[in-house]
Image (cartoon, rainbow, N blue to C red; front, side, top):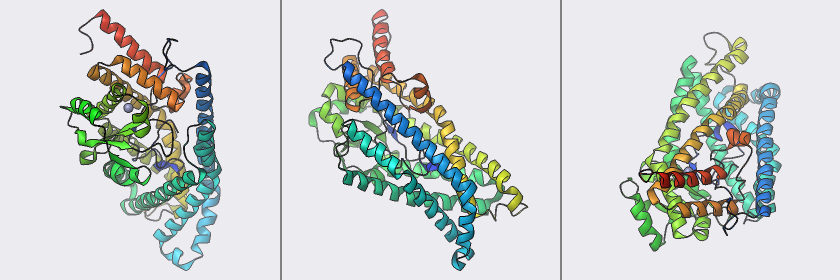
Length: 426
Ligand SMILES: [Zn+2]
């Protein structure tokens, strides 16, 4: 949701959802222009449609979050113990805790998929078709969904088995070890995402666009990025929305330009969008996000530890409490991490929107193409049916990118101040 086009694990039990797989996806585009004479402006009908789409997407998102929390709440507080007792009636599962934990995860995960499937299909397929944004059949959508679920299942299982092992073996400081492990996984996934995970969902090929490559080559000079690291991301078989992103760490660092974007934008516009992505590289935003992830995961796991102590302490208790932490605590941990993730999201979004504004300014200064910036963002707004001016509370709580209106206004005000003082904008 949220205009993040590439998010292989949305609709997934959520501690993972906003976890280490997130790159820096882009371009919640920008405001419908105030000047009615611009041909790329949104018409009143288009604007109204974008608002309807934004509202309905938001309702789906909120319903999805509520469903996650209600489902995990019922699992954690009502069903987990009976399920665990039933699992213990199997001799093998009674003896092997890791196996029992695996079975518990499989049940919680599978039931979650079953409970949320209709909503996922509605928001991921029906809604996108209703607004003419999807290019895929239901079968194609379902195949992507299955791949996403399988990936999330395998990944989630590894994460939670690892987490329980840390709790069972490292005792009361498990949350420090868990945060450290989360950090390592973030770094690893940051490296692997563009080469191993994203290709599962989209074709990614080196950009083949000589005229543009020459211009982009000039833009990356001195930034440490290479023009060989620019790729075309095949989005058009899934969606008509346009997007670009910076992904990867170290040798896998690259800029991905959606084919939808390349088809719709001219070289000047692509240059500005590309420069925005270079900004994310120059300002080391992925590194910073991983570090911020370390801070919030430390806090999150600590909160988890305190709440587990309150909930399970009297039962498991004593010096061996952690070593004997029961398997039925799994959904409770998922619930705590999910609620925590939702609560800190607005803080993450404040930081993310700040990064985006920084890159917008960078793109304008680096290219000097203000008109191309304005037309590119207007175009993106139209293509993605992005509400240029959502309610401030919606932006504050849920949006990782500034509203389009603000992004355009920024470019326009920058121009005015440039005219007032020629020295500005260096
Ligand atoms: Zn960005």
